[in-house]
Amino acid sequence: MSKHLVTLLLLWGAFLLTCPAPAQHMVAPHTQREEGYRAETLHTYEPGDSEQGSTDSTLSIRTFFTKGHFEGHIRNYTMATTNKGALSDYWSNATGGAVHYTTATYHGLQLGVAWIFTFHTLGPDLTTPDSISGKLPKWELELYDVSRPGVGKDLDRLEELWLYYERPRWNIRIGKQNINKGPLLLARDGRMKPFVYRGVWMQGTPAKGHRLTLGGIDKVSPRGFTEWYSLTEAIGLAGMGVTPEGEPSAYHEQVETKGLLVAGYENTVLPGIRLSYWSYYLHNLFTMQWAQVDYHHEGLILGAQLACQQPQKAQRNQEQTTRYMQPNERGVVASVQAGWQGDHIHLTAAALRSFSEGRFLWPKELGREDFYVSQPRAWIDGLGDAKVYSLKGVYKGLPHGGWNMKLQLSRYDLPAADELNKYRRPSFYQVLAEAGYTFGGRLKGLELTFLYIGRYSPAEETPALAQNFYRTNFHHLNLVTNIVF
Image 1 (spheres, rainbow, N blue to C red):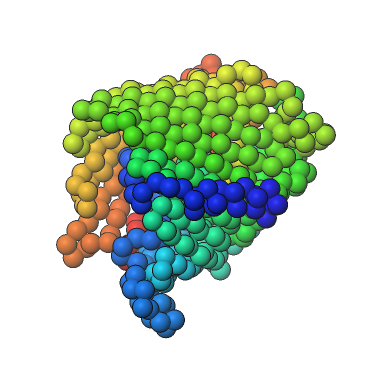
Image 2: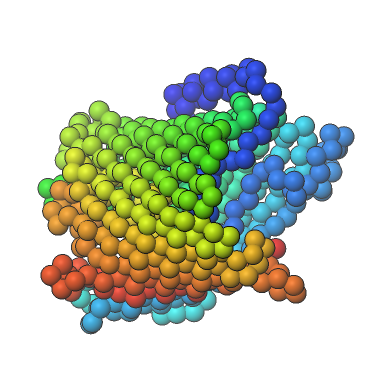
């Protein structure tokens, strides 16, 4: 871990320890929008929950462990994609699960560990490339390990191993952990394994309605992989696209980065208003600022987001093809939403504009962005001069069971030029339909989710057939079964 990270964390810790505010907890602002993506989300575990063992300060070493808490899930995931015309179709069924253990709490101290595994249970060989595009199936392979296509067993990893310490106004967690906080480090897009990180994560509540966050990450285990990687090793593993000049990018392991620093501030002091500001510093690559305001009052929903990004000076010293971000690029994205929220039904309309000063870039290996228009299989990473429009309806059943449904219709108006389209995606329309059911009674713990995504490009915007493969003109189905215990 870099000396810069250690220095910042020590300064932050000193501030939190000396903060004079009274010991008050705030209701944490929602960093992940309430409707979520159930088919994409694995269950995550947070330290400090009241269910996770005794907090008796008289605990012995033995009872510190024996009064801990076990939980986990078993997950079965069937995924299928039908591509256009003579392009190959693929499907696969994966089974796996996770076991998580946390100790009891002793004077604010807690330990946690999690192990996760995946097996290929049904389906054809995914290592046979499509005969027209020459490519392998994108999303089905991500159920397993993209770095080892064709391996369908022994896909396990140590998911989490952390030390947690909590005081009335602040807490800190060190080690391998599931962060799931802020607009960019979310675990929602899980497949069989979510994004997990190694580092330090601190949160403080110096006063009611104010939350401060400081974190540092030096390793990651991305979705679709089983190994842990330094950020230098990780960035570029999931694909690099092309440079603004149209040449294949080759930045994987070409720029050494010591880690990612994150600082965040969230405010819920004003009734119905949630303010947040996040700053990201990815050493030697870029800095990003993300500001957001959300207003919820008497059913009315309003929101605005602005993300601004610029490269680090180290990018100037790289060859053009080995740069992650060009020296003259400035990624700027603005998004707004408006809608209505009832007891069970949420309706929203959202729009996004990424400007032509540069592409918005966020490493696929670190997570996915959380703009109002964001949705599975369609992200803003790699785009400049793009326009996205989205209509969404969500039905939420009872808090502890029943149906949850979502329908989202979107239009992605994307630039044709490589200069502003890193992955050469065509413009498209997309429909997303999702239905999930959580059982109660004797079937409590069982959850079923169906997710359908259909994508279509008008004839005048459709690329050659080989470029349709997993980009447009497809039907994509997901059926997920979770047993939570």
